[in-house]
Length: 310
Image (cartoon, rainbow, N blue to C red; front, top):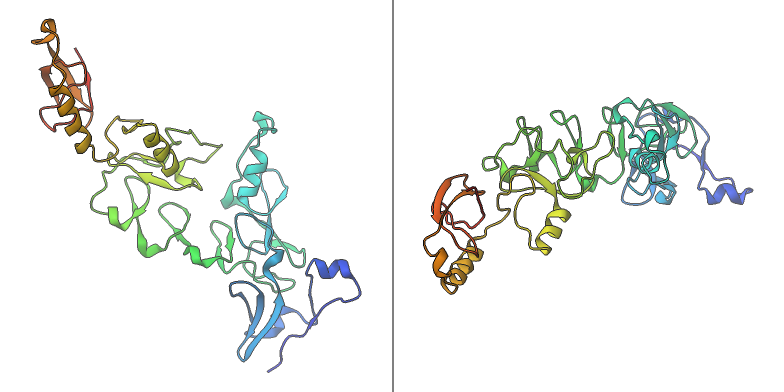
């Protein structure tokens, strides 16, 4: 079998530092040769063995391991990936009128990092034959060598997700992907992730929690929030959903402490028989209960997550 010959330009040290390597023949003449990446170095895999082509250290994008750059259709500039574009174009030093996100599905041109050839979006470079990314989505224009993320394209979401298709399902009412563990137990909320985080309000021109790069968690009420934001809330003793005020975790142990505190704190005589109407944030029931300065307990679900209505 004919193996592709590879030449390194030893006369130009600057070219060596860039890791640029040249073929004696076009990639399409290699027959069934296919470029792949196995954890580190880039190799040419033939039916009878391997030849090292280039080390993966030339991958510069901090978000993805890939061998190409993209030309943004919105501003006609070149970036390592869409996240690099969005960070550059939404920075604090950018005029607010000029801030924008890249329309990922409209990307038409990519530039090979190995040979610099600009071409239509494809997985294999038409010039040098390098594989620009082991995972490739033609719809999202996504390239990534790190397939340990278990990327997959969700037709319902219209974008690529990570974590493995077998571990997630798409909810048509919520219009997003959830863990299969929530398939028969999560409360559906229309467009649950199609809004900004209710705590940090992370939102750019077109991005909501639906496309957030940070972990998102589904609360028992069905609303969504950044995992880190929920943790920060709990660190400040805030245990109610910022949107609907329902408890975000099991508060039964806390309500038991409220019972003890109320029993140990009798109200002054003018308030002993004072009755008030309350609305329970957890179960939604309305009740008339005895007033206490510590809190009003819902007789239906035993929660103290209530509000006085009159």
